[in-house]
Length: 250
Length: 136
Image (cartoon, rainbow over all chains, first blue to last red; front, top):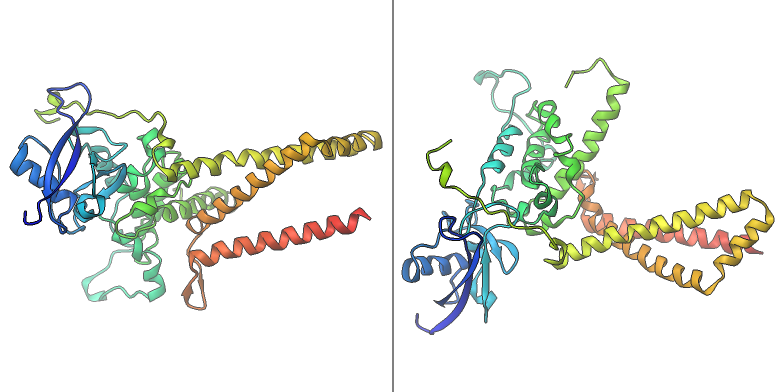
């Protein structure tokens, strides 16, 4: 490293076969101004300690793999720069509120199950033939869901949500935002199926509007808005069934 | 279940003291705690209504109780708490509302927040004006 700068990176290690609970371990890493926290971890793995485990893929904030707690905040480690954290030490920990699988890797199994449960894809209102041509949408219809479609499933919003930390069964901000992304799409006809999940206690009603999920989102999605809009939708569904009981059973 | 499942031992970190971990959570808890000020003031007003129904002596007793130094101190605390409660709710309000389109443009969060403040300012002025007019 040309300018010889070094920074201390403290990593919360957890090797289930070796220790009962996670322990902090310090590494001193030479760095340059263009190095991200992820690159610091890669230096540790390549040069100092090959046993360190962490997830990463794209290095450009689009794959959503490298989310972790950096100095206590949920961040994508690929777009958090060591130069902004000097003089250190930089404390790196696995994403909060998820079980730690090993070192900086969390267990995402439950998240993936929740994501699948809300059917995060367009369910056509009626069968459509190729000859019917493309769907048409106005800019206003696009705006209803566009920002929510930027979600990259990085789960930083889950690490920012104390209600998820206190109750891991809470569907959580990211999945609820994606459910809303499809519900709010004029091409979609799957709203009734998704509202069955959104309207439960573990759905939107576990949210207490902390709002930190929207602050930490690296893609500018506003999950708190998606969740709270659906409290209104869920309440409407509940009361309107008294007015029109002959509607769908869902 | 994979053949590695037996070796897995997910570590769940405790949540004790979670609200002290981030200033954002502290501000959230202040918003939640100051809701008790709103509740306390609602109870004080409800007691006033009950005392009014019980007759002149009871009503005057309630008014005298409100003039005590303790009650004035309590009201200062309640006022500050309610202003902070209103501020923090107006802050989160844009996130709780459906997307609003006015004149083809999306209404900004800051506009929603300012509208909240303006509405509460108007209501405050009207209530103070009525109270001022009614005291003579």
